[in-house]
Length: 471
Ligand code: C2O
Ligand code: CU
Ligand code: CU
Image (cartoon, rainbow, N blue to C red; front, side, top):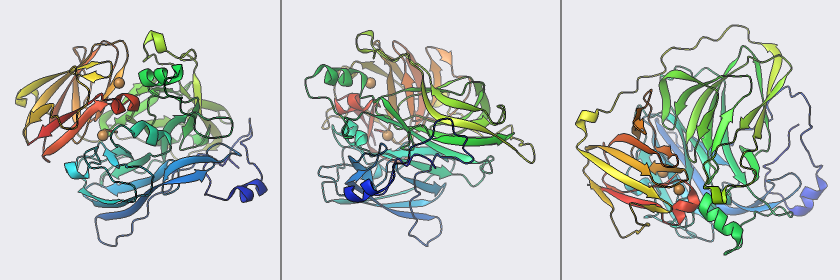
């Protein structure tokens, strides 16, 4: 049995009566201990419709073995339940806010009407309800996620437990038959009594958290610490990875294995790319193919290797310590037949740079965009529906800032002038220290006010965000 890290809400007395189940070190699991978050139940009987209920509420659950923690949770679980839909579906989410504070639910990366975006412009007050209703465009199958986006409180609410995955499937997914794993990555910090630790205001730690974003020393995959996945000899698994951390950037690697990187934020690439490691910045997603190539009976770990995104002054002392996220067990069972992979996963049509009518320069400095902090009553940029534009995003400081645009997916053109080697649809791109990235975007539809911001949630909350108005 695995460590049971996310348990249903039980009274304290009842919990004490239960044996404490802790994962055995060195055990050879026959089956995964990694558990998927629950999938939201579709209450609609209409075709091509996914209708679900989500409630955000305080809960007291077991996040660490043997302890209860006061959290915020979607439908009582961390991560929240996974929203599953297909391209072309109409999605209806009946949301209820039972938190003691305002919140929103933002459908990160999805192309939808501005009123459905769950941006800070549309807060849901405590006790309030909001129906998020939108259609999922064809060609946008991918791994998305949802999280709160209230003005100034995103980091706190995410740290309290509010985040979940949103998988959009394609009718013609060429790797749909591969065994699939969802890995939602998060981190957190706790006091000895199991409560979530936040730095006291004006403390040194709170200044560090402000600079770096809040990182935790406990790393979770689907809310579990060091779960395991079993893979057979010759098996190929599809892993969908979501970085739901507020600030931690992961550099994923599996020792002894070359990863096949097959997709990013908004779906599959055209062809697989071989990588020894993959940097996954905050809010980014990757799709990987992991292969059963190791010695039967052996174990390796999915690692988070050091990645220096920090200012030297606030770099954590242990920043260069590799951390294990998950145990991958090579079983001695063998796949009955070899797996053949398609050479092309899908066509990613190129946005035409010759069609771009505007090139915008966006300068990221510490906590600011183009020299300003966020003002909800200001519009920072104006654009027209249907326009194609190039954004030139320059980071002028010595710390990485992952840059996210709401509502419209884009294609990276180049990084520091080096052309992107292949096309992919993205909604966030990490801009490393003193580097610049250009991307191309088309505002296909949906007038309104759209946020763009750094996805280190502390930076976003403190105003490293601005508004694009599309008319
Ligand atoms: Cu994932 Cu504006 O956010
Ligand atoms: Cu977003
Ligand atoms: Cu930032």
